[in-house]
Image 1: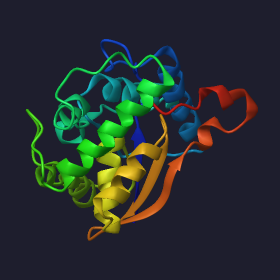
Image 2: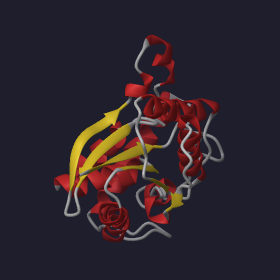
Image 3: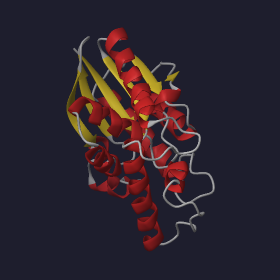
Image 4: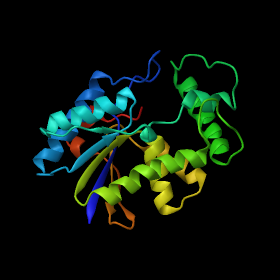
Length: 222
């Protein structure tokens, strides 16, 4: 039996023109996770990540922080959904800059609405696959891990693919999968046990590497 460590990327650049890059804190979160895993004596058989910059940077920082001599495999199927395309299905006009609590809440209210409709097959966001195809891409990565490995495997992705993986394993309805997605914190770890036949959820959304008062300011969600 192996263990799959599903990690959400470190803090990105929410509200900036280019979200897809880690903040300085996001890089520190990722390096700290690598140090924590190495301090536990955790050996990794393989590492995979999506191809988005915030995902690849997080994965590389974890491996560097832990001193792991691994070359990460890049899997586009682990990329996050396009939140702008999803929001555009329910709000066709450009949103104002997310620079206040009210606009931040509006952004996520619209995202939840768009996600619900996409997952139920009501809307087709521009340039995106159907939700069924999105799920298939995520589960293909899980299947690869089951078939190719028996030890510890690291996957670095985003809230959408991670919550989709959990939802697939637990058989949750779209509304619950969305709720899981919105709870996942930056650099948080979700663990699956796996055999050649199946995955089992072990832990969800853990930040054990940020335990302690000195790391409290490092806990972020976007």
